Length: 596
Ligand SMILES: Nc1nc2c(c(=O)[nH]1)N[C@H]1C(S)=C(S)[C@@H](COP(=O)(O)OP(=O)(O)OC[C@H]3O[C@@H](n4cnc5c(N)ncnc54)[C@H](O)[C@@H]3O)O[C@H]1N2
Ligand code: MOO
Image (cartoon, rainbow, N blue to C red; front, top):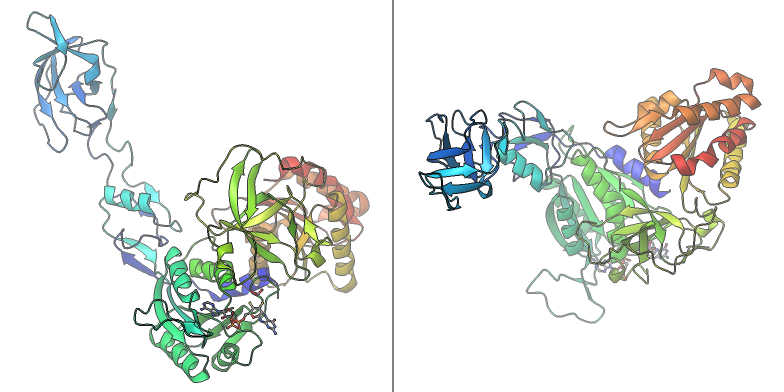
């Protein structure tokens, strides 16, 4: 199974958890289940933006008697008369009658005879202004920041620090959020010593410390899941089954275990999961993470959704990478995140990389910013046991297998897609604005280098016609992009609408160009997610339609064209081998200008 397919399967089994009500601080990291409407305006009164004097802008006087003070937190009821000013502090309410504030730097203290006696202060009895005040100057009127009843936060947004602050501003004591997923973690292996156990003996011969459980407990916290520690479990079928029972008993949504999923005689997890539930996949064409396993186990209570079980490989790097590739997206889907899939960016390779012969690889890298966009720097030796390759990594570079790429390496400077796994805001000083001199200049091929394309055709194009059109599309894509684009994913679309739409969303999330054969524009538009750009591109659509019609006039009757889908483009064209190259050659030359 390919990674993209494995992710589709995982997401199809991850159902959003019910909404609960929580105090804003307790909701930190959760996804809002409802829009939040402002229960009142902010500021709730007209407030001063400066420390200075509140005055009436219709007052012709330039000299004022200071008749009192309005300080933050204190209401002053006496209206302001003509020729009067009130000393005011930032955030304090304007007294009735005042409609402007003049900052204190603009005022001079004067004596009764109007002689200047120095800079104005909070105790000056008379002041003169340098310039007449304008109406509304340095005043925040009622509702200037937030209008009463306005939707300040939208369902689907995550509660972060700013959201907590905004909810506090508005006095919201509770919000509706999707329940936080509960995730249990265990490590299996007779060689493991628990480093979290203060009473653990020193390492005996052939033993190592358990790295995976603490790492995954930390990763769960990073995804705002509530973690349950099920400890280290021996390579023993009964002990593993007892741990699975414990996870079910504690009502967790997800169980993550590591180790014991490969080919060894102590690899007991898969048989246990097969006996107790359904193993949806047990091998993925993926490096690291080949034996990645996903299963669902029914609960004892009827109608309760099944427990999701991820059995990750024991190698610590494989466990870390697989967590980001499938577990984190599942947790995000459970937590109601509208886009749970890993976020993809484009970056250039800082140095040449060697490709694995057979498996697509997720190469750990740090990102830096350059004048030509992001640059991905390898974290060095990528063997699955070396956790140092994950330390400080921001991204997983998606490398195709050499067999798929038709080349053993990808050169420095090539554009590649990367999955974000770190927090770019955290930074580590690697951000720079200068282009490293080592990067070779652009070539026409490099314009397309590393751009991942997808090919999808409808199940409705039967037998030979589909394979001819698909082969023609593969060839034409490669020609039109001077061999730079590679086809990273192929899918046959089922007739059932919901399945077809989910598959299209998955493909569009992972590919910047998607060639859709026999799939009309409407189908793609229906697959668009709320909040995501999904629209027809009329200029490219007419070029594509014209090119198809030149080869096969009847295609003019079809609903073909180009759709912008998030950060990618989908070419909907008839599944007719003769029309496909013409359509691609018509639109590809324009794409360097159009690719969003
Ligand atoms: N004959 C084959 N052998 C292996 C294959 C294969 O296809 N055929 N696949 C290899 C790949 S790829 C991986 S990945 C590993 C996965 O193995 P398991 O998931 O069964 O894990 P273990 O054998 O239990 O452990 C592998 C490795 O990781 C260390 N480990 C395990 N748990 C932890 C932990 N909690 N903390 C730190 N280190 C841990 C363990 O000691 C082993 O060194 O299988 C390959 N073999
Ligand atoms: O899949 Mo394993 O993680 O390559 O070492």
